[in-house]
Image (cartoon, rainbow, N blue to C red; front, side, top):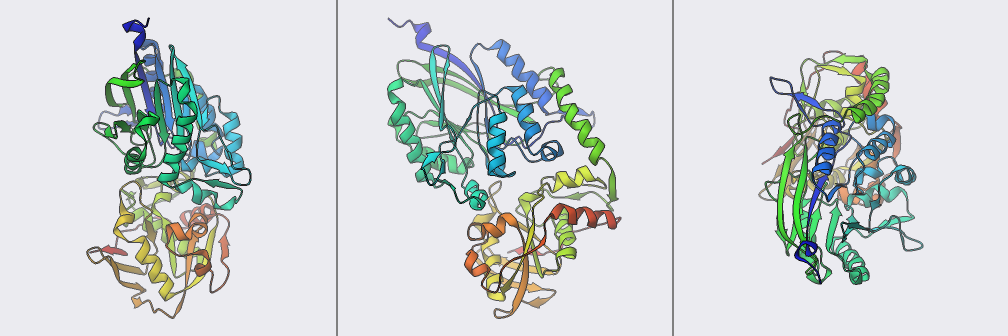
Length: 493
């Protein structure tokens, strides 16, 4: 006979997402109050693990990309540091593929923690790339974790035709159902999806799941959403914990063994600061090994800007976005240069700029492609990238453009009113050159609304540089007291 104590168990689930190499604490405010960083976060993890009997720590993707420590070691440093934190289970985000598919498999082998993903497949053999799920037995209760990735991973994988993914929400829901149905007999007490598809998509996914599958919770990432409290859709709790390491999500739940359901829950988004816990000195020492090496190599001053330039959000034209596109435009000799706003990983830069600052601001060291397009195609691209639904905070695929471009979009009528280059209207039948980052050239239909066939109709793409970072380093090094303002390159009415 099951006693009440055995039937109801308490669990604490701590969760992070989109940490993006945010390893170091920062001093903020007039008093220099220390915020964030993995040393403080690790101190809190250690504290909770000692206080609460059944503590789990999970990460919902995008551990990598966003700091020099990560970029210099291509994620290897990140995985070593994550091994130190010892998460119970992790799922992939889109940025885990930034260093290439073979390197991802190398990183996975380095990890001392399980990585779950249900919808990446090797096409030819229809075999899943990773373990789709993990069942942890915690204090006699079985908890199942299933991993689901964002649609953007498919775009990252276009370079590798042997890998495919079921990316639509319907596909993802079906994969979840397949796994839940296969293991229902194991009497799973709690089922948690670790997703990296964005908060709004999480809510849609929850609505598609059959209640009989028994999914209790979705812990997500990708949209960098800060919540007051979790959403609840189809009796499924949905949450995520913003971005970086300045905060951590915490669920305290009670699970009923008889009904395999959560009967009580409390959730908090907890600020990670010096009031929360003592820093973990061992992890701090370990991170500093990487930091000292990176500082020695990259902490040299390359230029001084006139003032600090900002990039507050990706959905608008920004000062820093304009400076970076103008720097690239000077080298690549194109009429139009498009740089994804999300490629710029900082909110401000300068006035003093070290090489480390620059590489942290623009960490993507890929090639740039130049293509010939007609004015009609250029208008088609701008109409697509400026549409209102492409400007959702946190999930948009917006761009910064070079000097001389002026595009005016009418939101009410959902149309491009005008497009000009150096004050001359773009002519539909005239030819122009456009420069694109590799990711967007290879994913043109999803990101630019134009097929690869259309994009290369006037000739093959030319690689104008194999390293956008090299171009920017030269530009910043050879120009002092650079300045940039927003000037109405992209106008929304």
